Image (cartoon, rainbow, N blue to C red; front, top):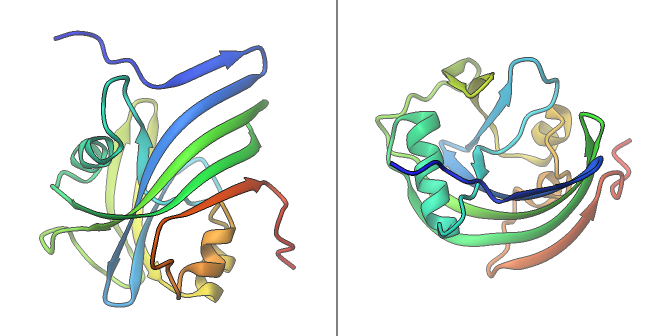
Length: 169
């Protein structure tokens, strides 16, 4: 088996990253995850590998992180995401897909439903209400998604996002 090569470029304190994420819904909730050492949450996904399609990346990442085979739906957003994280300035291209998480994956409206070790990070997953208010309270970048969670785009939308673009007060 050849060594995996994620799509990532470093230049000093700057990093380019290609990330694929999925929004899975159940009973009015959306699935989110975080590394337990972080205060913020994200939509589950990960970095693409060289030679891998974005849909294949999402299926692989969900198999690795959730242990289930998801169905990848339509592309919701293509995001040019600029942010600062762990002493680096990131330029990330993100594809955010609608996905269907099989019903064998656990659901609870308030509790952590799954934990996993991913590289050096311990991840935890939970379902949160798919509402503007719930996602605003959660701290889940990129923040524009919280504003659109109740009315997902009918067709794929391109967004250029810089941390701090949305006044969250």
